[in-house]
Length: 315
Image 1 (cartoon, rainbow, N blue to C red):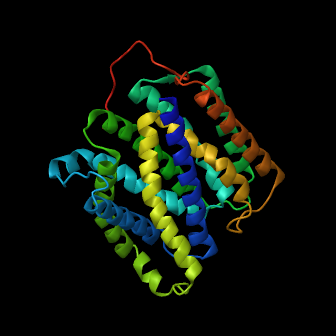
Image 2: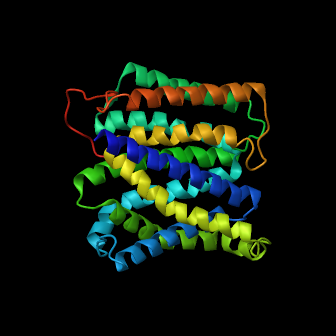
């Protein structure tokens, strides 16, 4: 069980690291005009790969069922918001600030687990989380590239990450659906809304004036981003199945330590300041502290269930 917990968290962390860099290179280094089109590419590749794997009999995939689709609709909405605002935040913010602001999702997840899944965290765990938030606030107080749209996108991304993780945990525990089935329904139910949004927001028209279509480097990272979208979502659901939603969230934040410091060199949109750097470091060290507490034992010692056993519904 310890191997499954640690292995799924490591898999998710590596996948999240790779897609973060790929997304940033496409949206910033190659100045791709539409993050919605990139999201559409990730959703489309996910559906195509699932169908190919099913055709080759490498995976079992359920047939589409309207009743199941209706039951999963809230999860698809959260997935839609998560991918849309995540890419929007990646485009608008430099990677160090993107990574540190993403840690607010850890605090949201902790409160969500407490009130919805009835799981409380020990004092040491809560202390490490609050330290991460303190570091994020210090870094944000001297962000020389402040962008109101980027901060709005990342806040919404954190919210959808939280509800997505908690709701997925409930669905994986209570429904007879595997990770591939949930990926299939999420991608299918969000494909057409994403197309409609891209058309009516004018994002599709921007693609006609993009001047990097013949650049092989752009296509390499665009396809890498689209492929990693499938791998990331699978690894995320796998990690959520074997761990708590909070552990999944903090695994992503631990990955962001590399994103924080390497991101100063990638994208070319980070401006250094001493106070900002101190805040980034405080938040990163706190992520390491939490991760140590989480994986120091085969049993998730940070989770202490209260006497009440009744769970409240998310929706």
